[in-house]
Image (tube, rainbow, N blue to C red; front, side):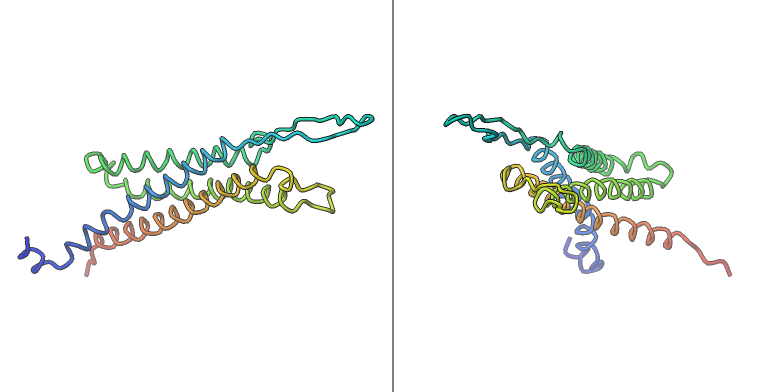
Length: 194
């Protein structure tokens, strides 16, 4: 083993490079699953005084759920699709050497990663916009902020968005590494004809 390492100093770096993408993909999977679960379970109920008759307050119970906003529903769907995508690609990478699809496995994975990046970035951006609107409101449109009333709901939503953006950055890094590997593989297979 020591003689092999002395003859070929690239052996440890190849082994390291072989684990980088699956490890990053596993972290991205964890981030997307966390974002999905936190936002899907995000719910807060509060009672507000809406009127007072004499000295008796009349209260109304209001619940804030992610289902009330289409942007948050899309966020949950996009992150769940991204987590399933990463899980499927991890499975394909572990058994994919047997089924290489005529050498197109890496290209298919890179393309599907790009589609997943587009899907998650749309979902996370829409949710971030709604989160900003919930925190700040919009005085021109006369939309009131709600995060002063539903602080736990907003804090859990912010945590889910942070997890989603972390997963998105990790998936972009995986995609860049995959494309570089694909490019290096295609240039290694090219031959120059004199």
